[in-house]
Image (cartoon, rainbow, N blue to C red):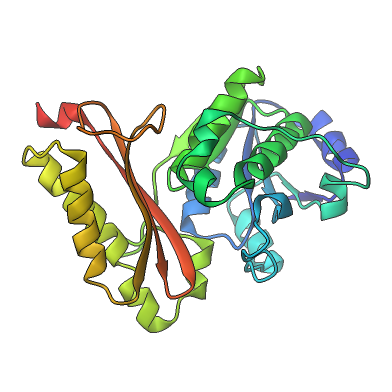
Length: 282
């Protein structure tokens, strides 16, 4: 595996590499969810490129940029074993050199859910992803469904800016008790880790009552809230039942619906989601 730390280095490596190229952008501290993306990219691509960059522009002033978990040596070993060809590990100065002042902003999709709670977050995400797309110029790029809104934003960015990349969505990878794998799970104490399983339990409750015929978004939302409120360590930020394309909140689940939640367990903020499919009722 070749490691590049500058734009010039990675472009030189890519110039000599066969296509198609598959790109997996990450912030590192890799887990099985990340590795599922790399494994799929390996199946699809002649050249697999991974990136590790903790992007400062997508963190708010009171968020966890300085404490975000990092273990580059471990990540390198994992990616070598997964058959990744090129790993790009830029510094902040490489991605945002002195005088950098160009930003990418996607519109309506970024005003809801995470965008509402975390102002500026998606401007940072969109900008860094656009830069990585331009630097690597892959045929395919791989993202996880756990960050469902981010996935929609990246698809919109790709379409509107004519990158022409095939955006591949991969399913959420979960722990044995259903907790979605996340680098931030490492923040949880043992008691908090047990408590965190309530997120998936609440989403499974939503799926169960939907499949019994409940279509009222308000009723489903209330059932999710009830389950989450049974856990003393859980603090709800939002519960959303939204049209999966526009992220507009629904009154009745009659189209494909993204059920997403943001919950704090102690001080650790976790997100998760499932999709309700009307065709499942037929």
